[in-house]
Image 1 (cartoon, one colour):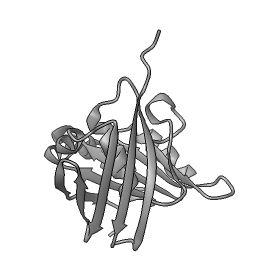
Image 2: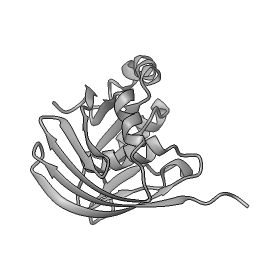
Image 3: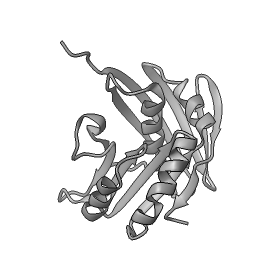
Amino acid sequence: MAPKSTVHKASLQVSDMDRHYYAAHELVLAQHPSETDERVMLRLLAFALNAHEYLAFGRGISTEDEPDLWRKDLTGAIEQWIELGQPDESRLRRACGRAGEVVLLTYGGRAADLWWEKNEAALARCANLVVLDIAQDESKALGARLARGMDVQVMVQDGVVQWVDAAGTLEITPRLRRGRA
């Protein structure tokens, strides 16, 4: 019998002054057995950075044709496709053809830097691609905060994220590799 996913619940308050978005979200995150705590928390961070009433978690790891998160309009057209990690560049190119905007959140320190060096030129023609990188120490610190039930407040101002939860405050500064200025 295959191991089951672990369910985490998060009460997320987002105050994004850069996008003028202020809302509360009650979220359920299913952690795939092969998924690290760090990756689960980065999915939650990706949600906070792109929060919208129609943003939803995809099946991600377990499904080839779905992203980690996506936002569809009322007709079913994909407005935003959000990936994490270091996906195959052909997957990102396909996503850029299917969605209005594709956001990639890389992490992993030197491995993410090497992945970007290898794929930057091939992804240059993807005009609707945004690539952000989370520093390894920040992503590890975020991963250490995973709990079955979380109450999180996220404030974004001038590209800097203030993450506040039961463990205290964590400052995260996503580095823009490509995309929106």
